[in-house]
Structure formats: structure tokens, C-alpha cells
Amino acid sequence: MTVRGVLFDIDDTLFDYSTSERVGILKHLAAEGLLELFPSPADAAAIWREIMEEEYARFLAGELTFAGHQLARTRRFLAHIGRLPADGISDQAASAWFEGYTKFRTAAWAAFPDAAPALASLAERYRLGVISNSSLAHQRDKLRAIGLLDHFGDAILCSDDHGAPKPDPGIFLAGCALLGLPPQQVAYIGDKYDIDACGARDAGLRAYWLDRAVTGAVPGGEIADRVTVIGSLDELVTILTTI
Image (cartoon, rainbow, N blue to C red; front, top):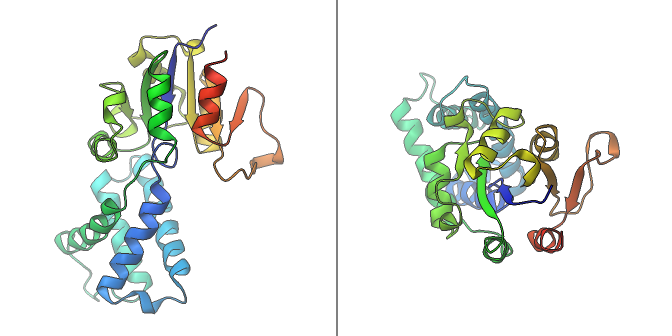
């Protein structure tokens, strides 16, 4: 069947999340006089990322709220560097510390250079939407800040509101419903092989794995059937506009 709609992941697909996260935590630690506690900036960023991924998984599993996972990240990180008070830290103090990080992170928010041109080109032929494992309010603010929100209108679906995260088939099917299309007529693009590409494929969508680093590294070493690998959104445009 002909592709009539395209759904996108956001973080590290349209939006350079990893860079903003790294810049944000390093600038925050420098401002707090804490960066010198680490062997290198790379070590500091790696520890922050590891804690984020573990606590974010708890948010996606429904164990923590979106705000709650931010507090958990802060407490674990401060404990790791020996800066958590013996009597703990209040929610207010933890929130204030995390807000210091987000100030620097938000200042570094940026879309990938190929995102806006690709969306503008695809919007001429396709219905566009978003599926994200996150909070809707947070992701809408992010898309607005990087100038991409208008491409999607109300076709933005986030796991916090849907009730189940990717790779659950239901969230992909709900995204297709937002576009008013059956899954066979929808392409999905994301940077995570298992969660995005395989999840979309298993839900019946046309799956594209965005491997910006061109690593080709996947579990088992081989790309699964019905998953197309692309290195950029420019490549996606070329493929879809020649179908």
C-alpha cells in the first residue's frame, strides 16, 4: 500500500537531545563548582546519562511520574558524588538543582540541521505526526522551542498520556489513528533500533531506523527484515518521495 503518513520519534531523531543533555550537565556542574570532582567531563556526562536512562526506564514503567524521575535522578547523582546531605534532600531542593541543569540544557536545545527541511518537504505529500516516550507538555514545549511544532498540529502522541510506551504496538496504532490512516500506509522513523524500528515493524508500520552515527550496531548483528536503515532524514525524504 502507498505511504500516506509519516510518524517521527523526537529525541535524537528530530532533536539533538544527547548534545543538549551533555552541554547542560557540564555547564551546570561547572557553575556549581562540581565538575572538578570527576576524572574528566566525559566521565561526568556518562554518569549523568547512565542514571538518566535507569530512572527514565522507571518513569516509562509507571513507577515514577515525569517530575518524580527528575527528582530521583538528582538524588542519585548527588549521592554518587558525595554531595547528598546525610538527612537527604527535600523535593524542593532537588527540583531546584535539576532546574539549574535544565536552564543550561534548554539553552542548548536545537533541531538537527536536516529536520526542518525534511519535514517541510514531506509535508507537501504526507500527513505528519509524532510518537514519543515522554510527557506531552514537555515534548510540545521542546518542538515549539526548536521551531518544529507547526509541522504536526495535534498529531503528537506521548506515552505519559497514552498509558504505554514504545515498543508497545498500541501506541504505534494510536499514532496511526491520529493521522486517520491504517498502519500499512504509515512510515515510522526513530533512532532506537529495538524500541522504534522493531516496535513499529511489529505493529505493522513501515519501519525506518535512523542510524546517524552509521554504526549498524544491532542485537544479533543483523538488521531485521522489514527494517530500513537510513543515515539521515535527507535520505528518508529521497526514499519516500521516490516510492
